[in-house]
Length: 230
Image 1 (cartoon, rainbow, N blue to C red):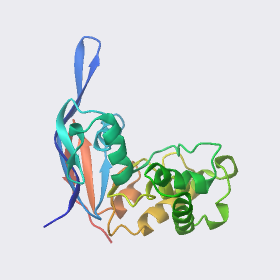
Image 2 (tube, rainbow, N blue to C red):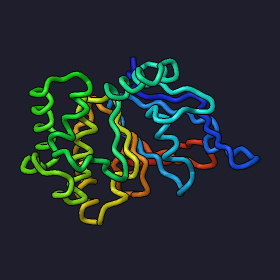
Image 3 (cartoon, one colour):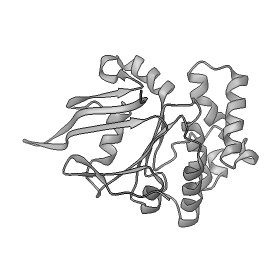
Image 4 (cartoon, helix red, strand yellow):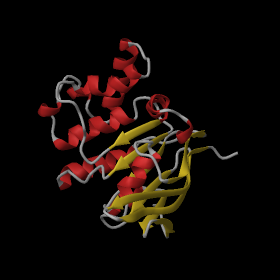
């Protein structure tokens, strides 16, 4: 049986704009299998980030359902939903969202500590992940001492800390210079995703080309695009 780690059924999101309702998503169905990589593309303002927030349980849909690792997100209260996100989802945003007072190792260890891991276990896992993303010599560096590309690599390591079922990425190279973006792209392409699925919102065709599937979000709906993977 195929292991579906993330899915949405009939997902709708409507915002109020004065006296009128603006429907951003109009019944989005999505199913993501373990280890699968999917790119979501579309013009600015098409609702890509809105969709990612709904899939990650960071926002509540107007209608429809989201399932993460087989569990209905709307069936949980906020505390339980936060705990489930910590255990099963990783997030990488356009901006790294690293706290300036924490070192790279502390930042990556934080989701593990929140999830109940011991300090020793969390620091060891963080060290392993930072080594995997090429930052073994930056463990004790705070964000202010890291380049933009290095900060984003820390953010990627942090997203993988709890061995999530799925990582959601929102324009992971969108705030980087071309050289740093290329390094992060190479890292994303090289990540071992045998167990972890990836949903990547991107304007970058080079990133989309690395994925298993490419989906277009247009007029509030997802459609699959012809896609070839090398």
